[in-house]
Image (cartoon, rainbow, N blue to C red):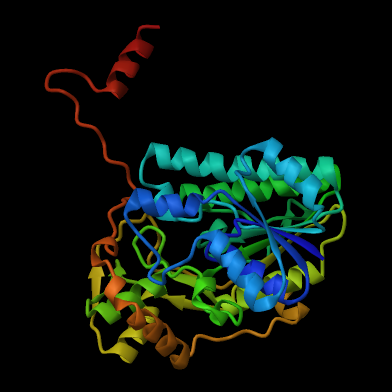
Length: 401
């Protein structure tokens, strides 16, 4: 296949490009270095040092003898995106080019707007480009299990069979996203589903759980091929954060009671899921949904497992998010298993490997970036003494006609 990886410089995008290239496919990556600019903005960095994209691509050519093409540009620029598709002529597009952090999307109005525009507009541009250049391209879009929220019923795989007032239909499973980031993913899903129905496009939406790990067979071939290990409060995932806190000798900080339960998977399983989706494409006009995770854990359960392996204590912080801390959580994930996925479970050995990886770079740990600063509820501006607030002024104007 000719595979175009959007967001090919990112945490999952880079190992995905290597994985498909190693399997013999013709691969190109698209990126605009936005993820690196987020680090500059926030004063954060990957714990595992990552090389510039040009160095990565050159190193891969040396160790493998194969070439990964590279297009530098922004998919919110429709002309750039359309030209890239016309030049490379992909058969499969793996779309990983989105702002992926819920906390980042909740910082303030500007970050919420940026997340929605970057993610939704970029995906809309992609759908139009596919329709205009080659409608047979199979789009594999990385969604998130966070689209569903935590309903008090089992989460089906994308669809729900409903009987209402004597009539039945199969409808998209109701979504209860928990941040502006997750909302952007819901909007993506709706837009993609519409284009499959209206234009006959083919797409697979992979609602992914939380990924852990940073090593694949390809990234381990040379330090210059490494991918990210994020642990900060904005872009770091919960298991990475606990592992780094353990190595630094700090208590593992659980938000609230820690009863929040989510789906998780090893980065190796992400690579397998993407490959299975590409090898078994959706049909023309089909919007296919897979729930991409292999195990479920509570936050407190993860903390206790890391604590057991490291000897570090567990602490609880007030939860900065607006979410249920104790809830039902049972999600169906049979689609990819039926295609042949063989999961890598989170064993004690895997946790020990993560601790060892963090320990090798312990001198780069910046503990000041780990504790949360973003609150899900916005800070309200205090009104000047003796004057009405903006909301009150609007109410008074409305009251006069």
